[in-house]
Image (cartoon, rainbow, N blue to C red; front, side, top):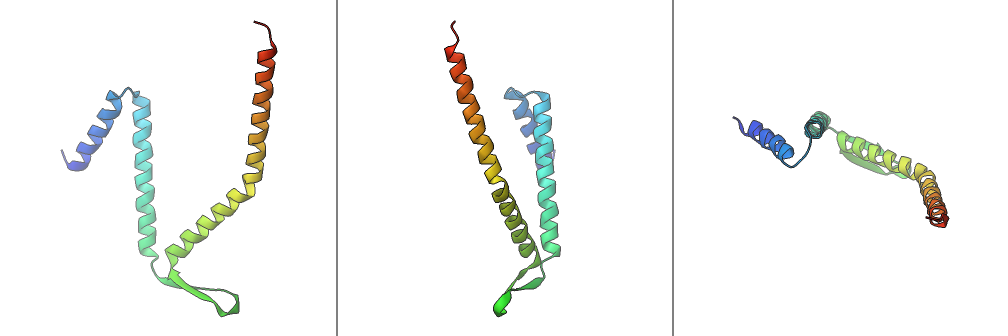
Length: 113
């Protein structure tokens, strides 16, 4: 058995012995496989797009960096702005859930046993 196959075998055997069902270990294996595939895909993308590009700002400012880094930063900033945009809604929902749970707890304690 090669090294990678042996590690995979022990990973799956350990998951089965630790009380996990067959479905859970299969899902874990598929999740790990998907993560490795995406990592390799992004690594290949970064290797193929390593040319230096210039990002020009107003007032003559300029920043030079590899294209893959510029795209990664742009993607991360977009995600951050998206999370900030929906954070008000998320916090509002959490407050409402907390209020409803508190009201449900008060009605449960008010009922006679």
